[in-house]
Amino acid sequence: MRPWEVALRKFLKSWEESEVVEAAILTGSYALGLQTPRSDMDVYIILSDDADWRERGNVLIDGVLIEYFANPVRAVRRYFEEELVHNSRATARIILTGKVLFDKTGIIEALQAEVEEYMRKPFPKPEPVKVELAKYVLWDAIDSLKDAEERGDPSYPYLYHLALKRALESYARFLRVEAPPASKVHRLFSDEAFRRAYLFPDFPDDDFVALFLRAMEDVKTENVEALVNHVLERMGGFSIDGWKFRTPVKV
Image (cartoon, rainbow, N blue to C red; front, side, top):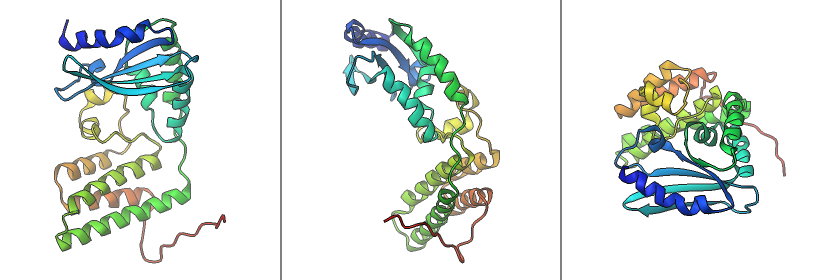
């Protein structure tokens, strides 16, 4: 037995003995065999609906860092709904890609059947008002970046990567797809096997992916500007001259 498996067994003992615990899943990189020396071990614990609490924590066992999440079944189902509204399938992905450690009641199989449906549900269509505002924010991000570059401002790298982040998130919402998490975005865009392991579909715009990767790998203003211009064009175009944003006053 490998050291991390010994640590996991020690961690699970008290949880498995608890009457309020129904199941546990090993998730993330350890479940997929993709862990690195810096990876922590992610464990998702499912509590019965008798529990009136949830818990998130970290514990170090034999040098192995374990991060755990414990939630009642009803909370897990609520996360499916809440995350869908925000263009995320994080909890659904945990249930589908995780490795079952124990299941006393069969709840994981039941949740997996539900999750299959959630993975097929479309994300909400963005409101036109929010799309228009997002386009201005992207234009402003590039303008601020150019200003910082011209002044030799040390904030330039920060503004550069903020512009990258905003371009990805805004365009993903516009396309009604899930934006990859920051720690995995490069591999999810460049490594098909990694993408399949985490159940991320191909991003629907190959040109965007190529521009995004170039901007990540070669930090130049013109690279992130090309990315943002591509996004603005796909989102309907944008001109700062004459741009205005009028909304109702609700007070």
